Amino acid sequence: MKLTVDWDICQGHGRCVMVAPEFLDFQEGEDKPTVIVSDISEAQKSLAQRACRSCPERALLLQE
Amino acid sequence: MTEEKKCPITHGWQPYDPEFRKDPFPTYKEFRQQCPVGRVEAHDGFWAVSRYEDVFEVARDAETFCSGEGIAIPPMEYDGRALPMEADAPEHFGLRHILAHELTPRAVMAREEMLRVSAQKLLAKIAEKGEVDISEEYAKLLPTTVICQLLDIKGDEAQLQELQEWTEEIVYERKDHNSARQASDNIVAFFNELIPERRKNLGDDFISTLLKADVNGQPLSDQDIMDFCWFLLIAGLDNTAFTIRNLLLQISNSEELRKELIADPDKISDAIEEVLRLYSPVWGIARTATKDTELKGQQIAAGDKVMMLFASADRDEEEFPEPDKFVLGRTPNRHMAFGMGAHRCLGSHLARLEIKVAVEEFLQLFPDYQVIGDVDWNNMGPLPIALSATAKSTETA
Image 1 (cartoon, rainbow over the protein chains, first blue to last red):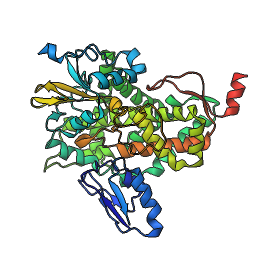
Image 2 (cartoon, one colour):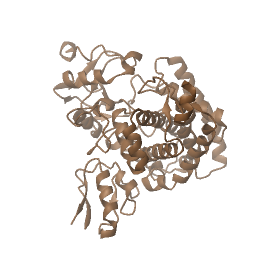
Image 3 (cartoon, rainbow over the protein chains, first blue to last red):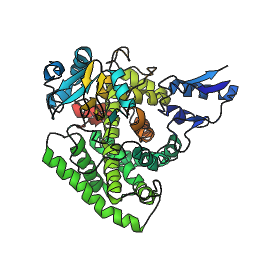
Image 4 (cartoon, rainbow over the protein chains, first blue to last red):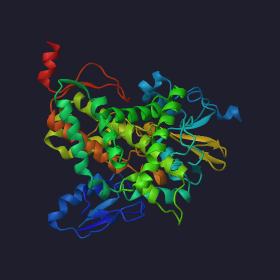
């Protein structure tokens, strides 16, 4: 599974980083988070889903 | 021209009228429906923008709507600037990033233990009492304790309370200019004493970070450092306190919500988002038009003040179905309680974590607390509670 961000929609709220710092982080000087781990295993799936649900803009997506 | 601008609904609006402040939401609804961009006569005139889509647009267009001319109407009782908020590009970017790395989600999560210990200490004191005003003794004191730790301000509880009272005077009690000015002067005097001391003993606190900062090869001026400190205190205390208070009140009002949050504390984060949306602590922030422009058919002239009503936008029925209802897990929940765009609240991650820790720790110790009597929503007033159902029944017996 792939964790991806639609950058046109993302507003940089950062809630996903609070939920799943394992997968997302803010880089120095950036106002939007970066996906640091995009390949999501079955074991990581539920955390990744929670991160996606936390996104107020629905910009974070987990795709099969 | 004046004729054209006049809107009967917004024209006579007095944003600080205590009666209006008690329940501003029906008025905001009228604004949205009848005058979404309406001229207000008070405070030398400004535009009130009340719909979600328009507030979003203004917030995102920092070129047309600047912050450097002041973000409060009327201006706050302070002669400096609220930094980094009242700076515009390109200066703003450099100033914002001095503290940005201290306030990223990761940096904030590293402080979770400190937040928890701070909350637990306050709760240990509270636990000795049966009945307590948790607005004063918890909701306000926790953010004050936390900001003082971040700025390395040492003081006993009375001193911290004094700092908190000063900020409340400036932010919430805007009807009395003299006391707000006095409170603001007190904060300046406080930092005037603290900053030179800190310069001699640099540490890893936020003030030291400001003192060590380098923006394009230049250190910050003394005034800039004061402006940052002044605003860190204003921004870091009352909005967080206000939301902790509101959430504890919300939980006490709904047994269903209480049960859900106790059974699954992960849902506290959702409850926080919803309470931020319903009672957005920063109800409005102003911008100044840098050029003639148009918004919802209204002609806005260069130099006009524009007030983004976040508290109204966050209850816009076009964006949020059943906007006045508390919906746990509402999704999407694109509220703008932390603003939007280049100036979005730098401390939002810290605020969210503080509120989460505050409510988690509180519910764990006092799962069946009850609010006593009728209390006001949407303000910083007292929140008297009985810590346990037993304590309350003894009280009422």
